[in-house]
Length: 123
Image 1 (tube, rainbow, N blue to C red):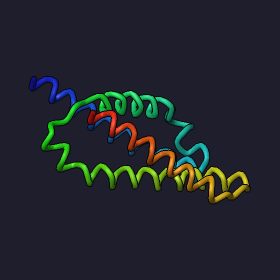
Image 2: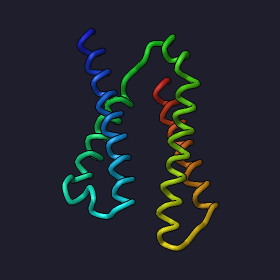
Image 3: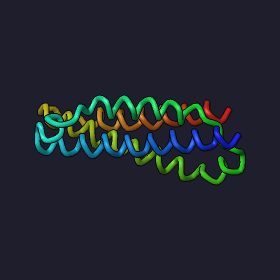
């Protein structure tokens, strides 16, 4: 049982590190093209992030921990949704088409997808 708990914590930490590394690389690459991609294949970091995220997604939490972390989960989902809105805005503004309804729709879709995943995880 202890090994399973350790593997759960390691997968969660790998997800956080790879996610924020990818996010940092993405931001740096958008400021100066080739700054990151000339040295690092960012797709590898994204793949590690996705695999670790899938591993974290299928983990179960204890009932008391779940209740204590509920409000933190909603704040995190809101933050990720706002981040998705900013990224969509950046991509759309780079192409010259600014459509705020599309940006808001992207944020809502990301939030609802996370909410759906959370509700299925706790069932």
